[in-house]
Amino acid sequence: MVKVMVYPPTSMILSDLVERMGHEALVISKEVRKKINTPGLDSPPLNITPEDAKRGLRYAAVDVPSGVRGRMALIGPMIEMADAAIMVQGDGCNLGCTGCARTNELAGFLLRTKKIPLLELRYPEDETEAKWFVRKIREFLEGLE
Amino acid sequence: MRVTKFVVTSQDSEVLPSDIAQMIYGSGHDVDVKETCFGVMIDGEEKEIDEVVKEIRAMDPPGIFIKDRGFPPGDPRRCRGHRGGGARPGLYMIEYESKILPLISKGLIADAGGDEEEPIPPTEKAKWLSSDKLEAIIKKEFS
Image (cartoon, rainbow over all chains, first blue to last red; front, top):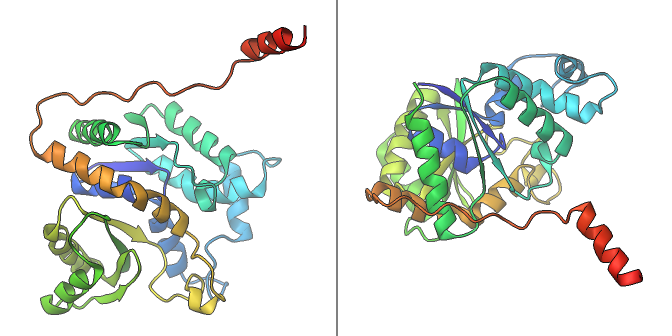
């Protein structure tokens, strides 16, 4: 079983396909679950705290907006854990943790420079593209050891 | 550790969220189920959830999609009932991906059918207008 980072990290389609093939999908909801299940000073525990913006300094400079650093506090450790990655562009979702273009660029850069098996695709828009999309993901996941 | 998962049905799946809920109630697993507009949420111990996930997938392998959720069902930080309405944060991605689930289902069926033919790669999409081309258009229009 290989730890496969999916990007967008909230993608249901990608995490489902990865787990169907018997690998472990690294998704942001698992990171959020760890945070909210860990006892802390915040009651109820928040999913992002001022401490996270500080942890994000490991991945982005201090003059980078705190939104990027806060997101990277969750996404950065996932990139470090990843043995392989699937990145899909063109989701058109401009809200939430995938709504920050700078974070998406930084995460993409870190994944490309990590030198792990990486598959980059676009979301399908018709049936022909969907067949190609599913085939490429299956072939990529089957090739992982 | 307790885990929560979303189970989302494709629009062209013949399985309804209520069918999934009924199956889980009948299976005897110690799992909480909540029906939603797009599928069901299941919450329980990790081992129980893993078994239930296998049974749910078997109902319609290409038409049922499952993802993890960070917060438990009805959590006041996410539940609309506690936040005065509006879309739940995180719904937008599910909404976007739900629209293309029928396409993914067709892709999974074609792939599982042992289709030996190599699928046709997507055509190159129109790229951004280059600055040189824009400059040429401006010169042509205003000269």
